[in-house]
Length: 188
Image 1 (spheres, rainbow, N blue to C red):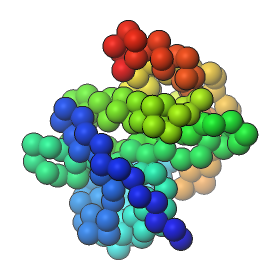
Image 2 (image 1 turned 90 degrees about the vertical axis):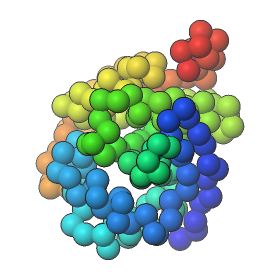
Image 3 (image 1 turned 60 degrees about the horizontal axis):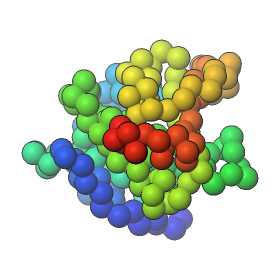
C-alpha cells in the first residue's frame, strides 16, 4: 500500500500532522473507549497492535491527519478526507473524524473540521465536500451544523457496522459556492 503524505496544518489550538506507527499507543488510549468508535460504526480497539495496524492500513494510505493538542503535545483524535462513494464522477471528498472523549465539548473538532474544510476547497479545489453520521450521533451532528453543512437526507438501513447492526445514516454536504459564501462571511 502506498503511503500518502499529508501536509502539517495548524489551528489556534491544534496541529494536524501525518500519522506514524509510533502513534499506536496514543491512538489506542482513546480508541479503546467504547464511547468513541461505536458512534462512527467501528469497534473499540483491542490493543496497541490493532491501533498500529489501523495506522498502517487506513491512516497512512489515505488523507488522514493526527490531531495534536498544542498545549500538551498529546494525540487526541483523527480527521481525514476520503473518496465520496456517493459522487464517484464529481470532484468530491468525504470528511470523517474521531476524538478522544476527554476532549469532547471543547470545540476542538469543529476547529479541526473548519481547517480541513478550508484545505479541501482552497488547496484540493473540491466542488463538493460531504459528511455522514449516524442518527444517534448528536455530537457529530452538532459539529456538522456548526461548520455550515447542509442536511441532504437520511439513508435508511444503509450502513453495516462492526457488530453486524445496520444503521441509518444522515448525509450532509457543502458545495464550493456555499463554502465561498461562508468564507466571505468569516464563518469559516
